[in-house]
Length: 223
Picture 1 (cartoon, helix red, strand yellow):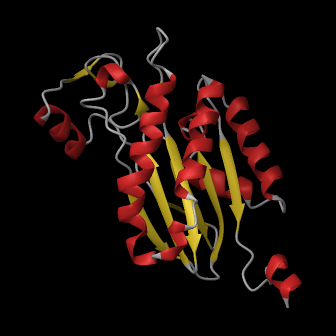
Picture 2 (cartoon, helix red, strand yellow; picture 1 turned 90 degrees about the vertical axis):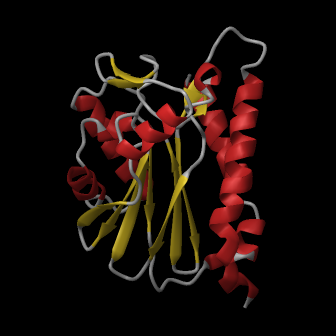
C-alpha cells in the first residue's frame, strides 16, 4: 500500500502542479476539480484493474500562487497551517458520519453504519478517496478546496495522513514543527512523535516553511 500511496501523490503532483494552474488564478479551483481528481482517480483505478485488490488512498495538496494558498483535500489526510504559533486546519476529514457526507452517500443509494466506527457499507471509514472501486458510487474523489490568503504571520504548513493526526493534535504538531529550522527535520520529528505515541496507521508527513521577503534564487540568477 505504501508504493500505491506514493504513486497517487506523484499523480496529484503531476496533474495539479502543471503550468495551467498558474495561467488562470481565478479558475484554479474549477480546473483542479474538473481535471485533477478525475485523472488521478482514473489512473488509480486503472492500476488496480488486473488485480484482485481494491485499494484506495487519500491526498492533501497545497499550491501557493502569489499570496494565495489553495489546499485540495480528499479523504482523511489534513493540512494545518501555523499563524504566529496558532494551528489552523485548512481541510476537514471526509468521514461518513459528517452530516453532509452522509446525506450525499444515502442519496446515492449507499448506507452508513457503525462497525467499530462509522463506515460506508460497513467497510470504509472515509467517505471520499481515490480508488475503492467497489464503493466508487458512494466514495467519490471530489476534493474540497480552501483558499487561504498568506501574510507574514504564517510560518509553516503541515500536510499529513491520519497516522499523524490520530495521535498528534494540530496544536502539538505546530509546536513541534516550529522547533526545527529545516522542514525535513520538522517532518521527521512529527513522524517520530506519531510513532512514539502509538500510531497504528500510515504516517506520511510534509512540512513547508514560508520564507517571507526572501528573494527567489532562480529569479535572482536571471537578474
